[in-house]
Length: 110
Length: 170
Image 1 (tube, rainbow over the protein chains, first blue to last red):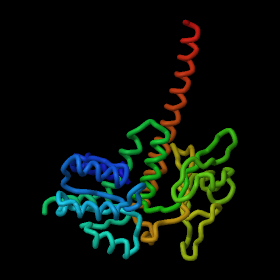
Image 2: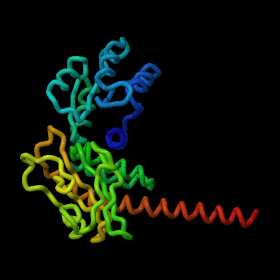
Image 3: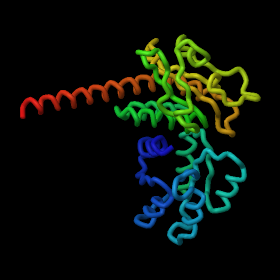
Image 4: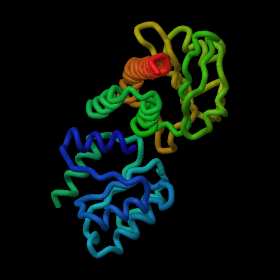
């Protein structure tokens, strides 16, 4: 997912993006710098996206930061779990690039 | 729709590294089409067989090699036509009978095929944008694969020639 979404966000919307390889790497990056929005998959090595969402929401620096989950997991229970843990949006693949860009724009303008 | 086609096309031509090109094809098929299990097979012109080179949702080693002209995949490659299964109702994965075959073509010369065996559970049917992506993949992915292989071959030959030159000039 990464290459396509990162490209779309950088090229079409001009965002600055920092990529992480997995949840642990993501947390390291989050503690090293300040981010306005977090995009995550669920199925990641070492630490999955749900665990990441939970840990991010427990970080006082990121209590209000928008989190978008983009995933192949289409079950309603997965969606509900992610939202209950603190994700703002849950988008299932296949993705529509414009939908993701609009969702990012909407969440960042709140 | 246009945004999906744009990023797919741009990414396919963003690299001359063969493995990266394959990875981008996998990403497009997973993320933009919504396939869960599929494979990419490339034509070995010496044997006239399609050899699996990449896959998602299953091991590449599980995919069989296929003779051009044999079975659904082989016929799709032989005639250069996309194949779509009539109905997905009751479908179970069958390496001889995929849901979709997209021959990778440069003009009318087929260099490989993408065979899809399973879609994500939330993907009920193909939409117009999917058919546009299939058309894009058929051409642009083929060109990207071909170019990256040519580049890799030429880099290897260059390295060999340089090695000989170094040997002779020492």
